[in-house]
Amino acid sequence: MDQRPGIVIAGASGRMGQMLVRIVATSDRARLVGALERPGHGWIGQDVGQAMGGAALGVTVTDDPLEAIAGAQGVIDFTSPAATVALAELAAQARAVHVIGTTGLSEADLERIAAAAHHAVIVRAGNMSLGVNLLVQLTRKVAAALDTDFDIEIVEAHHRAKVDAPSGTALMLGEAAAQGRGVALSDMSDRGRDGMTGARAPGRIGFAAIRGGDIVGEHDVIFAGEGERIVLRHVATDRAIFARGALRAVLWGQDKAPGAYDMADVLGFSSGADAMD
Image (cartoon, rainbow, N blue to C red):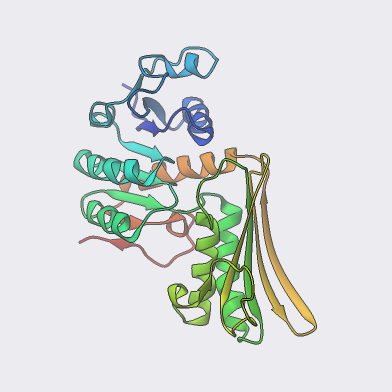
């Protein structure tokens, strides 16, 4: 009997979904057991491998998450906020590890996801790559070392089809900068400037978003002082880095206690997780 954990991919037809299908289907540490799409999607009822234009993988695309998750040990989810919240509750019922790469989640969404984490492992991150999570750690340390004489600006670039801004990764970086400074990002962020905005206020953390072409993901954290700038940068050129990180996360979560985790936990950067007793 195959002891590898069975993984369901939500949003299988999307850019990340297809990459995840390929990564999981060829893994020697996991099995692809489900592929989810929204009701009415053209892939419903087709083998996911054939729908992607390749060989059959023996997994039929379905719009029934309850059926797909029932026998799975993990769900990888880069979809939409509403779909993610619903999947979190179903994955919790099945005690399946839920890896969430969805961005644009509201405070209400996060509260429902946190409730689901009382019953199952949830790993949520705005970015699953090793490099970005190293950048988060560096951002926090540099922000802690520099005072408000250094202005912080976060500039991110993504493909034209991305629907949310700032990106989840940019917000991760902003949170890291705010933590380094000992402030709340919600109190100090500038999300957009247009017209006569006045001079930049000291201590603010600025965000700028670029959208165009097929840019996979670029993030700069700029610390701008008088006479010098420090720029921390990460450039993604292949979406596979996010898929590999997500697979690593869902495998990591298999023996963990229920709770809310992030990629810092998966990569061993944090001292502990918000696990439930």
